[in-house]
Amino acid sequence: MLMTRTEIIEKLKDILYSADPLIMEKGVDVSEDTRLAQDLGLSSIGMLYIAIAIEELFSIRFDNVGVSDFPTVRNIVDYISEKMR
Image 1 (cartoon, one colour):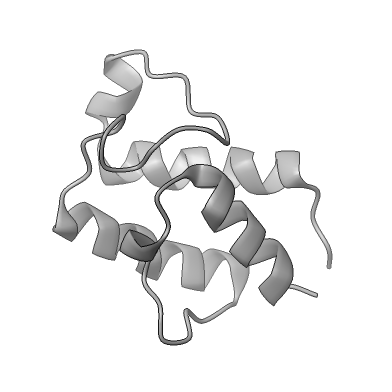
Image 2 (cartoon, one colour):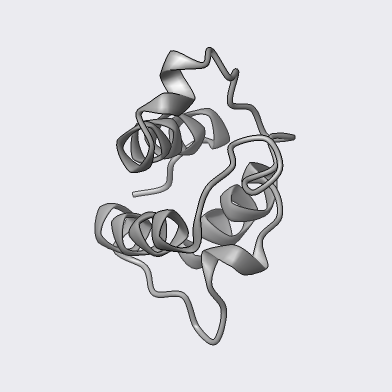
């Protein structure tokens, strides 16, 4: 089933908030332009958790790439959209 970009972003927000509850507490507004490392301060362990959660939730696999290869939420959304086609 194809999802809209908005639906993908909403699901990614849930994953990000699960990976680091402080993101929500800090009031960071997660958008497509949000930078994972700089804006959210995610650690490598947090990034690994996100990669696993994305693979499970969207039924995709990261082929020769990892979440750390995607600097922004937009890059992840683009990748997920492409893999779900």
